[in-house]
Amino acid sequence: MNKIRPIILALAVVLAGFLAYGFLTLPKAQPADAEGFSAERVVKDIEFISKEHHSVAHPQERARVREYLVERLYGLGADTVRLYEYDSLVGPKNRHVEYVFDAKNILAEFAPENATDETSYLMFVAHYDSRYSHPMPKRDTVWSYGAADDGYGVGVILETVDQALKQHSDWNQGVKVLFTDAEEVGMMGMTAIWENNREVFDNVGLMINLEARGPYGPALLFETCPGNEKLLDLYGSTSKYHYTYSLTTVVYTFMPNFTDFTIVKDEIPGVNFSTITDVNHYHTDKDNFSNVNPNSIQHYGEQVLPLAMEYLTNPEYADKDYFRAEEDTVNFTIPGLGLFNFSKLTYKIINYVLILLFLLMFALEVVRGRIKSAGAVFKNSAVLLGCAIGVLVVGELVAYVCASIAGAKFKLFGTVQGVQFDNAAMIVSAVAIFVCSVAVYWFGRCRAARSTSSSMRASASASAVSAYIYKNLYAALTLVCVLSAVLLFALGENMMFFIPFVCAVAAIILYHLTSLKVWIPIAIAVILLHVFSFYFALSMALTIGAFGAVMMLAFFDFMVLIPLADLYLLSKKK
Image (tube, rainbow, N blue to C red):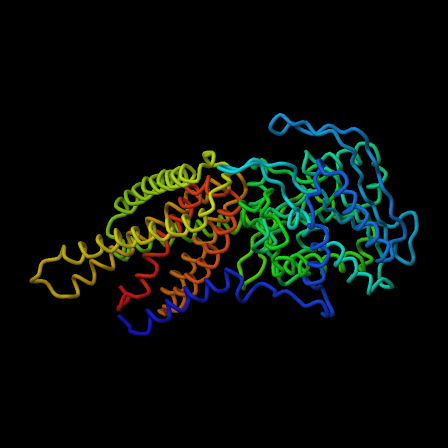
């Protein structure tokens, strides 16, 4: 074994971890005297907004927040600030309590200097009410202070508009700010204004909705309108701090959470941002000012402000229907490498070419003798699939045990709230499954090395080890290839399989063509960038209730990474 290769491999793993978790790829909070977007200025707004509970059950406190926001909007120089009031709304029952309340939406307009009746507008949307009473396991009913949900959204909008107004003379489009009321009781404020005052939206060409499902972590662009092709082009060309996966739009449709954007997304082009960490702060008394995270707030701003400025200043977007498109894109972010955005046709072609290359490569490996038996590879693929199902079951058992210990209600593949140690439990379990996977692989490797007669040369043992590596690597890639094709056909999305598949196949091809093994740690690093970032986001979004599903997906990556790393560390090319 080349002595430097383990060091290079370890560095690749560590660097991937640092990049994936934002140590080098996410912005740091800017101070209050910063020239550009400042999270610290946003924090000052949130401090007032989250001072008291201000849900639909707290009309006086909610009124104080509303008055503060109206004053702030006038202070920014709004041309008009109007209230849209809706009386005697009836919210959903919560522990047999039925809320009856008045809702008041706030609408402010900032027109460009050359405004006409045909001027298009960017509409920012966030809700200013906090969550009403929320039952918690082993605790009394709690009330949120709305610091993150949706103090983040409201504060980021105020700061973004303030920064955008510095270039007001360059605007070709205008800004509307809509702070909705009663979002937490079924988006009733947005529903009311959409149904009763549709004219408010007539000239809106783009909507940016800001939410928060927890105070920590990166701000994820987790949802777009249908036909997002032009929108993703705009997003991709502005911020350098992209964080999005088109798959999350698919996942979000299966989740029990909705936002104001849900009401209008089929009619108005737009994007939806939110933090997603962690669910135990969501809608509870932990959503308070002491848990505000300026770095997360800064990440909102570094994505939203450049996007808004491009829209406001570029005359190309004067047509309010500019962003209406027929096609969605397939997109994903790899930390440090940026946003990858493909048309669906291009993405399918890349997949088809990749599958054909893999099949050709597989056939050549059989002919050249690196793979002794194609049947053994297929058998191993079936075994790996069975193991993956076992990992799924184990992961859900871990989730069930954790929920039982915490006294939380367990929902199979559903949102589980109230397990305060869920992150630690998931990390420990993931590490344990990875260690077990390595141990089982290593046991098989040692058995393969011992299978040759002791009287034979050492090269025979090395050849047996090489055959073992290739058999396991191609078994994993074969399984990933099949699953990737199935998902592509069923959903048009297979990013979680596509990235490890394309990286591993490309690394093996380049290795055989150039005899350079450096391609392998590069592929491993890219796969790990994907694994660390995407599965973190997925586990935070789905919570520990879906831990088994997340671990099963990660297990497929483990099965590619382990033999790929072994191939890199193997002393001689076979």
